[in-house]
Length: 219
Image (cartoon, rainbow, N blue to C red; front, top):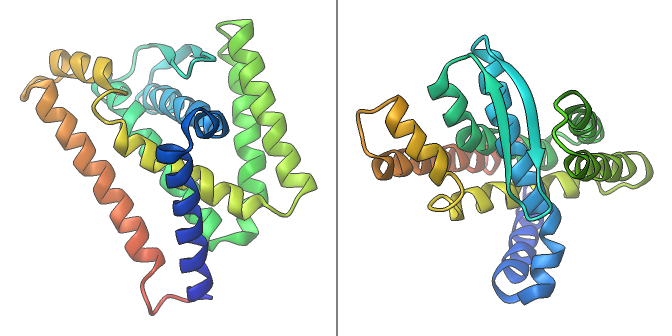
């Protein structure tokens, strides 16, 4: 079982690497759902940061070009800002771990993701475009969960790709959040906070992998 997990991990890592770095426009097209998922996880992280610190969410936007934004009210500004990057890293690691180790939760996880995306498009409505994107994604996840046996592999691929995307894109993706974080929290410059966030995301991923591949673990 441990060897099988290693094989699945290496196979998914290879597929992602080939598409990302050698796939050109075709690879970009195939990884487009991952781009949208990362954007959703990022914005959902902002939303959860607001809700968990007593604030509220007024809108969540996902654009077809992979950008997005979340409008919140109240809550802790520092947690809300940090929730985008680090929250998406946490969620990506959770998806990867469930796909890798917890096959009995894979279908339910995809359905929960689909439900959250569908509800976000309605409850936090910002535009017709955003809601359509979220609903198409939600329906696709629901189809995979209910009509295929690929739920584990899809979760593992989406989670791993999301984490790698987040780590690779650390210097670009959260730049506006970092600039605002510097103003709100202070202490360090945005560039220093960038490396702090990156270090935490990388450490979380390492901890996740070390736990999964520890020899004395059983599936």
